[in-house]
Each structure stands twice: as structure tokens, then as C-alpha cells.
Image (cartoon, rainbow, N blue to C red; front, side, top):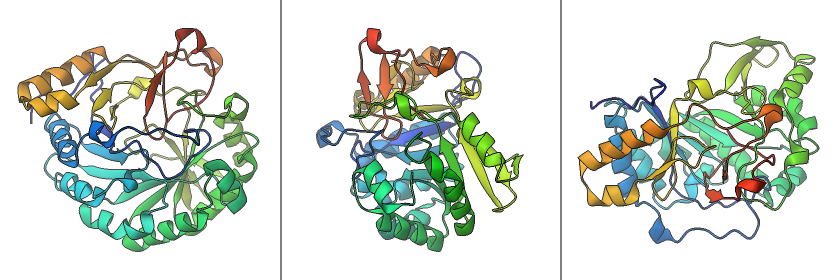
Amino acid sequence: MSAPLIDGFGRQIDYVRLSVTDRCDLRCRYCMPEAMTFLPRADLLTLEELVELARHFVRRGVRRIRLTGGEPLVRKNVEWLASEIGGLIGHGLAELTLTTNGTLLAGKAAALHAAGVRRINVSLDSLDAERFAAITRRDVLPSVIEGLDAARGAGLAVRINTVAMRGVNGDEIGSILRWCGEQGFDLCLIETMPLGSVDDNRTDRFLPLTEVEARLAEEFTLTPSAHRTAGPARYFDVRETCGRLGLITPLTSNFCAGCNRVRVTATGTVFGCLGHDQRIEFRDILRDGREADIDRAFDLLLAGKPRRAPHERHGRLTAALYPCWRCRRFSPLPRATSRSTRRAS
């Protein structure tokens, strides 16, 4: 193994979120507008290039890779990609995981397990069909439930990711937690942040998880858990459901000090932090094929990785760049307008 990826603050980067596409078959209101313009396919890394980049990351000490999108399962031959990266498990890579909206999971769960995936996150913000359709702009909740059943049948451990939104699903969180316990799934709640260009104003929808945790503690027995994953979630054991509850709190309890990850867009842009416009373009470097140049690019990225995202008091984000939390699509905004409020993970 080559020298590990260590940033200027001594943090070792051992976790990569690897976007395989910017496309998605849903249009979640907090994530993207209905009339979405996606990138030309020629701009994306090929599957072979994604595998090559993953190998370079593993060579530099990355232990965990998560496939994301957009919606990763809409990418043609994503099963082959998972199998190729999964082949690195035991050869430097410890775990390959995936985040999905679940709509296509029924037909792909078995192949993902065969590829080496053992754990997935499924985004699900409501169990009410009408509310689900209002949030996602698509009436496909039965397909998601079918996909979850297939994942469990294939032997995949499932964590449900739910974005907590005031006035949208805040009244449903306790019910979702109970349902997850019945299904054998963990639940992770996520605060909204000002990320991504969307039609809706998300400021009024922000629901601090400190408030949600206090409300859940009146109904459930929550005990801090030693369970950890590669990401920033803090976990609680839930006595009444025999399951776990995770909280991702980028605004009410910042977790930058322990950051161990970088994000890669589907075009090969690698970001050291979601809250900063600090990036390295890897696509052309990969296509030139010189390993020394790739290593230099990694080192340059890590040298510029900031200590923390530019949060202010009261949870406002001052970055001039807003990446979509799910698809990691990035669009620069004028600095004068960057003191608004929306969401990340």
C-alpha cells in the first residue's frame, strides 16, 4: 500500500462516497427540481474509470466505499461495477456499501449481495403513500417496499435514511421508528441543510434533531450505542424496538472534527468537503494514466481539505457552493446569497 491519505489536520481519509450517476428516477422536493437537466453521458466517468479510481483510493488506504448517485441503480450495468469494486474486499477494502431510493432494488438486491455488498441505506421519508408521492413527486412507494423486502431476503442489512422536515413528516417519525423495528431495519434521521438547487424553500422545513430526539425520548428508551459506521451518525439503542436510531446533525451538532471522507462526483470531481468549493478534477488525470500524477492530485486535495465546513451560529451555512445531499451535484451560487438555510449529510 502507498502512503495513506492524511490531511493537514492529521485526519486519515479511509471512506469515499463515489457517485456513479447524477440521474435519479425521483424528484424529491428538497433535493432537485422537477424540470431537471442532467449531465451528458459523455461527461461521466465510465464504469471502468470508476473501478480504476476506486483501486487508486484503496491503494492509498481507503477502507470503505459507498456507491451513491443521483440514484446509483439507474446506472446501466451498476451490478458489474459493484462486483469489480467488491472484488477489492479483502485486498485493502473492508466494505462496499450503497445508498439507494429503493425503487429498483427488487430486481438488483440479489446481484448486489453477490457482488460483496452486505449493507445498504435506503432513503424513505414517509410510509404514507400520498405523502411519499408529494415529497418525491412520484407515486412509487409500493416499489420501494418491494425492494426492501427483496433486500432483506437477499441478506442485506438495511438502514432507512429519513430526512426530518417540519410540517412534512415530523409527526410520522415515531411511527417510522416503530415500523423499522418491526422490519429489522435501523433508522437514521438527517437534518436538512442548504444544499442543492430546488424549487421549494427549505428554510421553514428545518427541524433540529435535538427537538426530535427529545420528543422520541418521551415515547422510547434511547440509550447511547457504541455502534459506529463509516459516516457521521451517532447511534442509540431503542429498547422498545430492539433496533437502533441514528442521528446525523450537521447543523445542531457539527461533526467536522472527525471527518474521514471525501466525495467523488460522477464526472470525477473529488471534493474534500461539502461546504467548500475545494476540488480536484480527476477525469483527465485518470485518462492520462500516470500514477504519479494521480498521487500528486490526491496529495493536493488533502493538503487543501479544510478543518471544518463554514457553519455559523444558529446553523447557517456560509459556503459559496451548494451540493445536493443525495446526488452530490454541485452548483456555485453568488457569495452574497450564501447565508440562507437548507441541508446535507
